Length: 414
Image 1 (cartoon, one colour):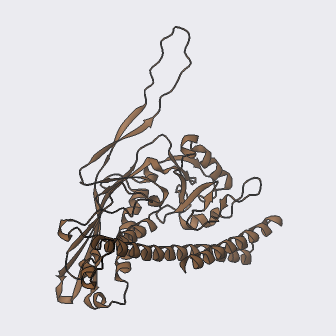
Image 2 (cartoon, rainbow, N blue to C red):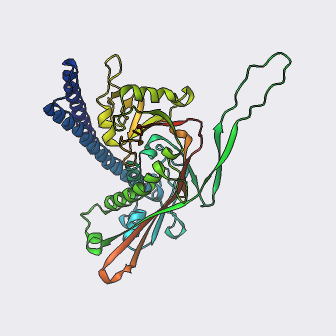
Image 3 (tube, rainbow, N blue to C red):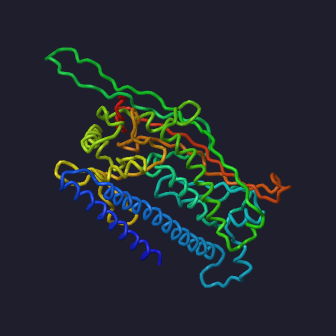
């Protein structure tokens, strides 16, 4: 059911792009700018693409949640029932999800964590619950949803950074490269000049990000409400928004060092255009990143969603659009052949603003301490008959290769 609807939405998305492209091509053929009506048509088509993207993401999340629930039920049955045996319904009922136990006041907290370093492909590999919850087989769907929403609002987490997951929160030091060795022309029998690579250290700490929200007991008791989805969405978005902004622009002082903070300027825009970029600017930015980084599987673009709307209008010297829509559901669109992602925390084009980032995102390290702690209290708002939930994430981030792995487009200062 979901697959067919997602496919139809993807086809509608492609149709919207063809409409936008036709509008741009008509104006270009006439060697003029878009008329007011054409600009309205283009913006509507662009908004339609964004809308379809959101619906596709939502449906994929629902489909994944149902898939995870089926897997959890299957795992629980295998855990309690040897092959060929029949399990009484009350025995099978003992293996409820960790979230149901939290909801029913059987436990006060969930400590969900990954067995391996977090990555896009590994979010579903979970360890058992903390000691207080016992060793039952548990559903992974709540954690999947929470992390999915965390990623949804943080483009950095989508680009494929190197994610280090540690059990404790002690500071860890990562070597960073600040300069490479240089070779020199040397005469016969002459002394060869030393040229050592320059290294430094990046210290990744454990900054705490937390959110607290309250739910009425009536809502908890209403079995018709997808409370698991609601709470995971609220917690994931809250943590993703707060952590995500620092992964982009964090100063590194009492907060993570953002990707933009560590990146170097690859291209500066022209004067008199209020920070806007051209096709040539983006092509120059692409080639300002040296081939080993540019050709890395982790090379990708990151920009604000509204900025991407401008990028969709740009063509190269052969008349080909720089941006190309994906033809496959779940595969990102591309810009000059490389995946393009959006993050609301990247600056919009403006004077001196760093509005487009490109490079090898595996050189940006995100440190996560354990998992995301999710806790419940029935006492905090007892007088209001509200149940209080809180989610806590501890993490840090920094660019470890400062030789040009990530570069930015910066608008002109005048």
